[in-house]
Image (cartoon, rainbow, N blue to C red; front, side):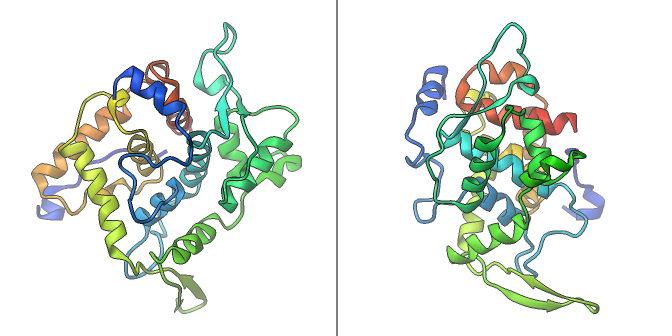
Length: 280
């Protein structure tokens, strides 16, 4: 699990409850207020875009969190699109990490990763928890009979989707002993919009209440942290604003997922994913 850290100055040199219920019932194809009006990206595409080095076209070799972060993004995206949900609260299963992921609709989404995950969830005889699904989709399971649920080549498949949307391009780079396919950013406007949206959410539109935050923005902050790419979002800020942004995000991420999830079911899956990463 990643930890939220502050950069060194020396090294660097410088909605209400009713609205949330309505959001839960929103048509999954309806555009959220903070989404791009030009290009609609999935949460997985946004996370990868934030993690990519613009010119080099690959993520940090030291980042071992982004793979599981992308799988968490798949679960949240499916929940936002009305395809899955957490099982209802009961006397026996109250905590987020104890509640199973249930199939709500198996209607295709049009995204290959989302639809592949849907088929896996539909095929399971016994429902699994959010934490278990992240492990299964990542391939981090000791059960050989469940290796079939692993999603392979996720980063490359998400990158190819961004290439098709005109945001990335494809190149080959030589790294002495091997050649690697890379995906440099070709449409910097979309990434800048994404970074600006997150920066403004914690600097200019900060409401101190996740229930009033736009749910995709909340989800992306959680996923960016879990994928260890949040530093990329705030790195361009001046030191004073950087500190404010990191402190506010830290406050958000340290909230109790159990308490916040109970306030509105529209973001239950977001808090369940955060709870899973907090435990890992």
